[in-house]
Image (cartoon, rainbow, N blue to C red):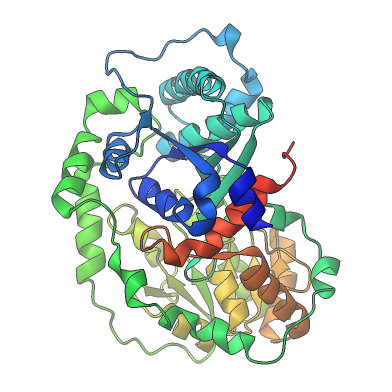
Length: 458
């Protein structure tokens, strides 16, 4: 089937890139033997991403970006309705200002209209038949896939998978917006498991990285990355691209240094505890897919309150997310809960194995806990909120009920195993976007081509 695709179908595919790793990654995907039928068009707006496209010696679109062409397009001609534009900028406006700065929101909507005009013309002029984007929510890709949908052009979403060295590749979206989130309990109950041994492979897989997998650490050297980091943080550049994060270079450098030099003290863990992994405070999973708890403070408040009502002797162990180092302080929260054990750097697997249960909003740590056969509570919307796999608790009363159940240690192992097997070996593709070779992404290429061959998504 793939052989016939290779010979008979050649498709114009737009790869919308918003990070410097993406052009190299997509090139590795389409350079596989099966990928000769893909005619790639690279779209890049940001300076570092455009430099990456040049590095792989491919033509890019738009061909020229003028820094004095700022962004006032006619709203009346926009394909996207006002409500859609509000939805498009929702994540970035929260990330930039948490909804408090109306000027940033106005700039973002104006930029979304500019992108809409560009993508509509670009798709038409180049006879684009499919669009590939990374993630789902940032303004650039949000407009790219919405315009494609309006024009009935197939869209494929890529994202890091929840298991080590895996990728999500989906025609519907990623995480809670993916097709996987539509699967119900009955679907997984009907999955057949292979002979014994697959679970051990799943647990040991992170240690099986090859030298080839480690070779490619990006396409820019540290000096170039630093140059583009400075360029993209000046005020003039940020007026052109209001959707970029407002982190200054000083915070970013401190974060990198801190994450490298921090030493993990060998703390004696409590005999009985629940593990709460904090998520990055600006993560889409928190800002968009978490209606119950809007931030890590509310997350811990809810968990602490529920746990103390159920078992006052059980402790809480919190591990901060490395992306929040030097960006977000939890000093006040530490003072509020002195009996909580706080960790900045610690082996996640050890914390999972020694815990009674894991409570997460919707992070991939929940999947890692399922692999270790630990009870899991989720508080946010997630593709793995399946009855019998996790205890989904969208409010405080449900969280109290779930806390009682998980502390009893009872889990549905047969259902969890069927879910994990389908997730890893049927749904996810093998690969890592930042450390990849052509050979390591053969599975990702096959998954991409399978979606390209399907009937167009509505």
